[in-house]
Image (cartoon, rainbow, N blue to C red; front, side, top):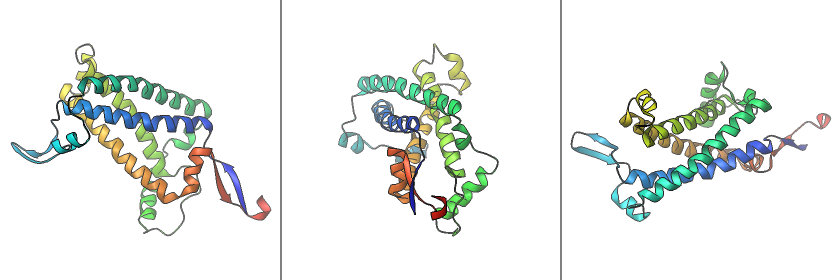
Length: 222
């Protein structure tokens, strides 16, 4: 028979649904900033194979000449992003949720089994835990990426006042590249995360919206 079972506490759901649009808007406002000096490309010397954002992309989405607006939005949202992330970390520590989220010695091996399961090469069901090894690694990595974005962002925003931090990160150019790479990482995480949510189905999505999921339990255990 089917039974409702709590999965995600209210606080975790709030942190999740606040972070998603805030980070998306930060990426978008960051694009307004990046337009003013879009130095990254794939190529060598004077040969460019691919620019991340061609001029046609900028014009289609009305990106050019919004540097000041982009910086304003980016730094306002930064405080929301930082506060939400800090509260999330504090909550997981105080509530004990970190025990479910933090990777263990078996997480790497289990993450590989999750990949095999997702591509159809593993037929056995995954361990019935709240978060599997792949999720533990991914969610922990995102928290570390958030801290990295704040540090690299501060280093390139105030390279003189925070010269020690900029130097620690390899200098201004390296800090800017690291900040850009982390942003690409978020986009890739979004794509994989949304694909996994769609694959998992409505029950998984409902758990992050309403906090509960529907599970099948033997009649004697109900």
